Length: 179
Image (cartoon, rainbow, N blue to C red; front, side, top):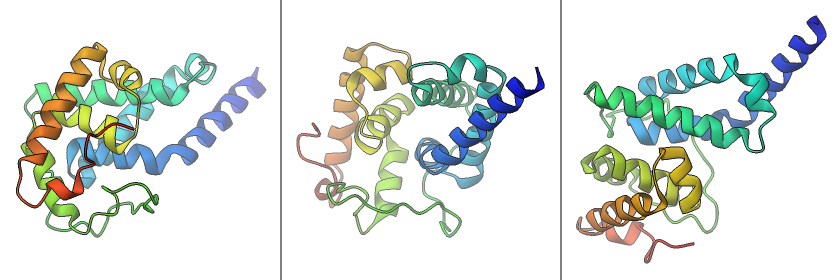
Protein backbone atom coordinates (compact mmCIF):
# COMPACT_ATOMS: atom_id res chain seq x y z
CA UNK A 1 0.00 0.00 0.00
CA UNK A 2 2.80 2.41 0.83
CA UNK A 3 4.41 1.76 -2.54
CA UNK A 4 1.32 2.99 -4.40
CA UNK A 5 1.27 6.21 -2.41
CA UNK A 6 5.00 6.69 -2.96
CA UNK A 7 4.56 6.12 -6.71
CA UNK A 8 1.71 8.69 -6.81
CA UNK A 9 3.86 11.15 -4.88
CA UNK A 10 6.73 10.64 -7.32
CA UNK A 11 4.39 11.07 -10.31
CA UNK A 12 2.98 14.26 -8.81
CA UNK A 13 6.45 15.60 -8.03
CA UNK A 14 7.59 14.85 -11.58
CA UNK A 15 4.52 16.63 -12.97
CA UNK A 16 5.12 19.71 -10.80
CA UNK A 17 8.83 19.92 -11.62
CA UNK A 18 8.12 19.62 -15.36
CA UNK A 19 5.26 22.14 -15.41
CA UNK A 20 6.33 24.69 -12.77
CA UNK A 21 7.72 27.37 -15.14
CA UNK A 22 4.66 27.30 -17.38
CA UNK A 23 2.25 27.29 -14.44
CA UNK A 24 4.06 30.26 -12.91
CA UNK A 25 4.05 32.16 -16.19
CA UNK A 26 0.32 31.62 -16.65
CA UNK A 27 -0.40 32.54 -13.03
CA UNK A 28 1.70 35.70 -13.32
CA UNK A 29 -0.11 36.76 -16.47
CA UNK A 30 -3.43 36.22 -14.72
CA UNK A 31 -2.52 37.95 -11.44
CA UNK A 32 0.25 40.32 -12.51
CA UNK A 33 2.15 39.98 -9.27
CA UNK A 34 4.87 37.45 -8.47
CA UNK A 35 3.70 36.62 -4.94
CA UNK A 36 0.06 36.34 -6.01
CA UNK A 37 1.15 34.04 -8.86
CA UNK A 38 3.08 31.84 -6.44
CA UNK A 39 0.07 31.69 -4.13
CA UNK A 40 -2.22 30.82 -7.03
CA UNK A 41 0.03 28.01 -8.25
CA UNK A 42 0.53 26.67 -4.73
CA UNK A 43 -3.19 26.62 -3.91
CA UNK A 44 -3.89 25.03 -7.30
CA UNK A 45 -1.33 22.29 -6.70
CA UNK A 46 -2.71 21.67 -3.21
CA UNK A 47 -6.13 21.01 -4.70
CA UNK A 48 -4.68 18.85 -7.46
CA UNK A 49 -2.54 16.78 -5.08
CA UNK A 50 -5.61 15.66 -3.15
CA UNK A 51 -7.14 14.33 -6.37
CA UNK A 52 -3.87 13.21 -8.01
CA UNK A 53 -4.94 9.56 -8.35
CA UNK A 54 -7.77 10.67 -10.64
CA UNK A 55 -5.91 13.60 -12.23
CA UNK A 56 -2.70 11.67 -12.96
CA UNK A 57 -4.67 9.00 -14.79
CA UNK A 58 -6.55 11.50 -16.93
CA UNK A 59 -5.84 11.93 -20.65
CA UNK A 60 -4.57 15.48 -20.11
CA UNK A 61 -3.60 16.24 -16.50
CA UNK A 62 -2.22 19.65 -17.51
CA UNK A 63 -5.65 20.71 -18.79
CA UNK A 64 -7.20 19.69 -15.47
CA UNK A 65 -4.61 21.69 -13.53
CA UNK A 66 -5.12 24.70 -15.80
CA UNK A 67 -8.87 24.56 -15.17
CA UNK A 68 -8.34 24.42 -11.41
CA UNK A 69 -6.03 27.46 -11.68
CA UNK A 70 -8.51 29.47 -13.76
CA UNK A 71 -11.31 28.64 -11.31
CA UNK A 72 -9.16 29.63 -8.33
CA UNK A 73 -8.23 32.90 -10.02
CA UNK A 74 -11.87 33.62 -10.87
CA UNK A 75 -12.88 33.03 -7.23
CA UNK A 76 -10.22 35.47 -6.05
CA UNK A 77 -11.27 38.03 -8.67
CA UNK A 78 -14.89 37.77 -7.59
CA UNK A 79 -13.76 38.65 -4.08
CA UNK A 80 -12.40 41.81 -5.71
CA UNK A 81 -8.84 41.37 -4.59
CA UNK A 82 -6.72 44.07 -6.13
CA UNK A 83 -4.33 42.87 -8.80
CA UNK A 84 -1.29 44.72 -10.06
CA UNK A 85 -0.31 43.58 -13.50
CA UNK A 86 2.69 45.87 -13.90
CA UNK A 87 5.06 45.33 -10.98
CA UNK A 88 7.74 47.96 -10.42
CA UNK A 89 10.40 45.29 -10.01
CA UNK A 90 10.23 42.15 -12.11
CA UNK A 91 13.66 40.83 -11.03
CA UNK A 92 12.11 37.80 -9.32
CA UNK A 93 10.13 36.63 -12.34
CA UNK A 94 10.73 33.29 -13.93
CA UNK A 95 12.33 34.11 -17.27
CA UNK A 96 11.27 32.26 -20.38
CA UNK A 97 13.17 31.69 -23.56
CA UNK A 98 11.27 33.10 -26.50
CA UNK A 99 10.28 30.72 -29.24
CA UNK A 100 11.34 31.95 -32.65
CA UNK A 101 7.70 32.42 -33.72
CA UNK A 102 6.44 33.90 -30.42
CA UNK A 103 6.24 37.64 -31.13
CA UNK A 104 4.79 38.52 -27.74
CA UNK A 105 7.63 36.80 -25.84
CA UNK A 106 10.11 38.63 -28.05
CA UNK A 107 8.61 42.04 -27.34
CA UNK A 108 11.12 44.54 -26.05
CA UNK A 109 8.71 46.26 -23.72
CA UNK A 110 7.02 43.61 -21.58
CA UNK A 111 5.86 46.23 -19.11
CA UNK A 112 3.71 47.89 -21.78
CA UNK A 113 2.05 44.57 -22.50
CA UNK A 114 1.48 43.87 -18.81
CA UNK A 115 -0.03 47.32 -18.32
CA UNK A 116 -2.28 46.71 -21.31
CA UNK A 117 -3.37 43.34 -19.95
CA UNK A 118 -4.21 45.05 -16.66
CA UNK A 119 -6.74 47.21 -18.51
CA UNK A 120 -8.68 44.18 -19.74
CA UNK A 121 -11.57 42.71 -17.75
CA UNK A 122 -10.65 39.42 -16.07
CA UNK A 123 -12.45 37.12 -18.54
CA UNK A 124 -10.95 38.89 -21.58
CA UNK A 125 -7.51 38.72 -19.95
CA UNK A 126 -7.95 34.99 -19.27
CA UNK A 127 -9.03 34.35 -22.87
CA UNK A 128 -6.14 36.36 -24.34
CA UNK A 129 -3.52 34.79 -22.05
CA UNK A 130 -4.69 31.22 -22.66
CA UNK A 131 -5.30 31.57 -26.41
CA UNK A 132 -2.35 33.67 -27.49
CA UNK A 133 0.29 33.40 -24.80
CA UNK A 134 -0.29 29.78 -23.81
CA UNK A 135 -1.21 28.92 -27.42
CA UNK A 136 -4.23 26.82 -26.48
CA UNK A 137 -6.93 26.02 -28.97
CA UNK A 138 -10.34 27.63 -28.56
CA UNK A 139 -11.69 24.31 -27.25
CA UNK A 140 -8.88 23.95 -24.69
CA UNK A 141 -9.36 27.56 -23.59
CA UNK A 142 -13.12 27.02 -23.23
CA UNK A 143 -12.48 23.95 -21.09
CA UNK A 144 -10.00 25.84 -18.92
CA UNK A 145 -12.34 28.81 -18.48
CA UNK A 146 -15.45 26.68 -18.03
CA UNK A 147 -17.39 28.35 -20.81
CA UNK A 148 -18.39 27.83 -24.42
CA UNK A 149 -16.10 28.19 -27.42
CA UNK A 150 -18.25 31.13 -28.54
CA UNK A 151 -17.59 32.90 -25.25
CA UNK A 152 -13.85 32.34 -25.70
CA UNK A 153 -14.01 33.74 -29.23
CA UNK A 154 -15.94 36.77 -28.07
CA UNK A 155 -13.73 37.52 -25.06
CA UNK A 156 -10.50 36.94 -27.01
CA UNK A 157 -11.65 39.12 -29.91
CA UNK A 158 -12.71 41.95 -27.61
CA UNK A 159 -9.48 41.68 -25.64
CA UNK A 160 -7.27 41.68 -28.74
CA UNK A 161 -9.23 44.62 -30.16
CA UNK A 162 -8.62 46.60 -26.96
CA UNK A 163 -4.91 45.71 -27.05
CA UNK A 164 -4.65 46.74 -30.71
CA UNK A 165 -6.25 50.08 -29.90
CA UNK A 166 -3.40 50.99 -27.57
CA UNK A 167 -0.83 53.13 -29.43
CA UNK A 168 2.52 51.39 -29.89
CA UNK A 169 1.26 48.06 -28.60
CA UNK A 170 -0.37 46.90 -31.84
CA UNK A 171 2.98 45.80 -33.27
CA UNK A 172 3.43 43.35 -30.38
CA UNK A 173 0.10 41.61 -30.97
CA UNK A 174 -0.02 39.05 -33.75
CA UNK A 175 -2.18 40.24 -36.62
CA UNK A 176 -5.27 38.13 -36.99
CA UNK A 177 -4.37 36.31 -33.77
CA UNK A 178 -5.05 32.90 -35.31
CA UNK A 179 -2.58 30.05 -35.32
